Image 1 (cartoon, each protein chain N blue to C red):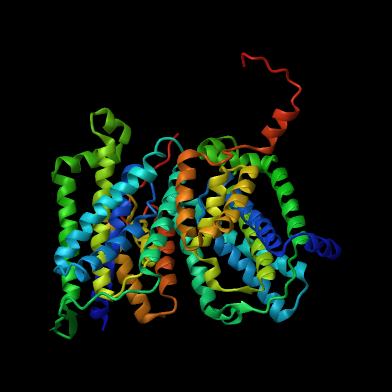
Image 2: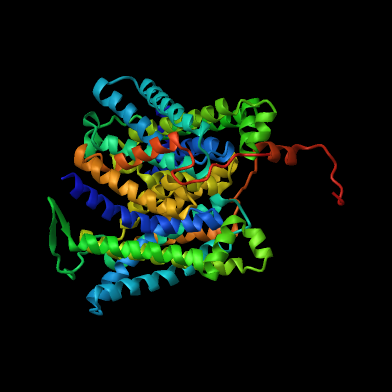
Length: 291
Length: 298
């Protein structure tokens, strides 16, 4: 029972982690809470659905297609709604702009698809494996493996490639990095693209796992993923992974052992407790304020 | 006041009256958030949580105990202020986005609590609240709140609030007790939210947990930021614009929220510091009534 719940929690948590990575990467570079990120995740889920049902593609091809689509969506949003404001005003104005984009996108999808939930078709035949006393479904294993691969890939990209190096430089000091000849605008665009692609992967997998997508699914998922990013220490990439997994596991265990009607309250309650005890998050750097 | 309401309702269309009452209530709420977020700079994204505490406390006291209206309003606002005190405490350790996350989490927990709260009617909501809130009452309270806000922001405490927003360390070095004032700013903001919530409950006569979700908190934040952070005239203007916008956009029917979202982005691109960023009554007064002779060079 406990281990089954643990696996459920890890599966949910890995999707939180994928979304949280986008929040934390964008935040690390331009200190913006990208509130439209949850909607990008929702668009990813719908793009995957479209590719599977209308074009009849294999689910893994559809996953990649959705990721590519959301890459462009993320870059477009950054170009239209954030870049004109950047540098001109406080972070809060950018936040309001992000909220505007979020409202715009969820309404747009509600107009296109209606507000009801749409079911994902049964695309993967699900096997159940018995490992000891634990039941594992092949779907859960697939989700865990795909998330792990994406996270390893991201880590390699950040640590090994030229662009990854540029991103790390920008997150340390955007101004100094651009003085060193790094094209900051391009790096920011790139960050949005990668974050959005990861969110799209999360969206498709959640769609397949829970067998349902709907236009307002982005909001709660976005809030949870943002809290996962904060829990892990915002701006830190391993932090977002750990925060997502922790939040997913604690939420599922809370529902299993405490009460299901308080599901959302449990996640946020834990978050508040952790932040009060450790204000910089699990992996965050402690910043001493100086004059 | 009853006579005034009777007179007003004869001359003004019920629909416009409804919108004006909502504007009045929203002004009270937005001015509360303006103190916490706009003036003191503590980003709070859970204002609807305080509003729901005020609304539910007042409504439950009205429905179950039939207490007089002024008493339930006061109880609701005080209860909200109490929670404002509790939520203000983490600000001693947290700041910026971490604080924002705690306020979001707080509002969500409150919402889930009311979803499971028996005397509040659970998910169905609480109906049959007596309709006590009238146009003139809302606006009398709103004007009192505006005047008190101006007084507060021009007082020693108000100037300390601004100082904390501008530079907390410098404020502390100047002898301002930042801990006490940050908690105080949360309490004042929450008090006004509770007051507005009580008025709202007794105007709509029906409240449900989903009325006070995350988007509601965001609406108030929009009002404060759009108008101009920390500015009372700005907050009032932002509130009027954002309360009217959805009504004006009714002509585009189902595309309403689409335009609303786009409007937020466009306004932020063209007026990044808000419509009236940091315009204060004091500056307006100085500009209009100054005896100083202006020369062209200056």
